Amino acid sequence: PYWIYLQRQQATIRALNTPMPLLGAATILVTLVSAYLRRGQRLRCTACVVAALLLVGAGLITRLANQPINAVVMTWLPSQPPADWEQLRDRWWHWHILRTLLGSAALLLVLVASISRPGVEKHASAK
Figure (cartoon, rainbow, N blue to C red):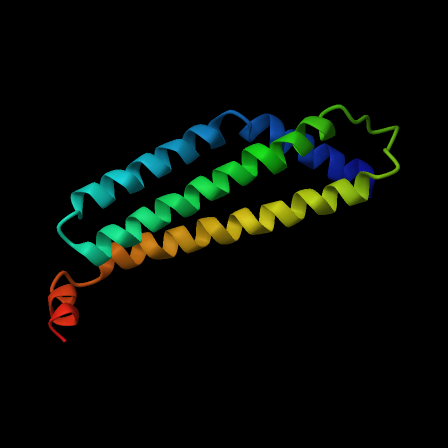
């Protein structure tokens, strides 16, 4: 029901609206530092740079799509559901899924860059 959605969404927005952008920026920065530290290992460095770009994309989705919807949701009252609340909820969910996919792909790339064996690049380039 509307009132349960509203209660949970507003509480989540209040709790995460400040720390999540800071955490996102820190994650991008650490990923770029990791790329720099791997600059002599082309595949690992590239994986980290692409991961950072995916994280930037996730951040842009948050800033340009999810946060404007969050601002609207914060004005809603439990006793007065807007006529289009379900459409707005579904649009927010669409963007949330997309940014989650970008973040997951970035995590996968960082993991691959972190756990792949250093000598693999030399063997791959020799072929």
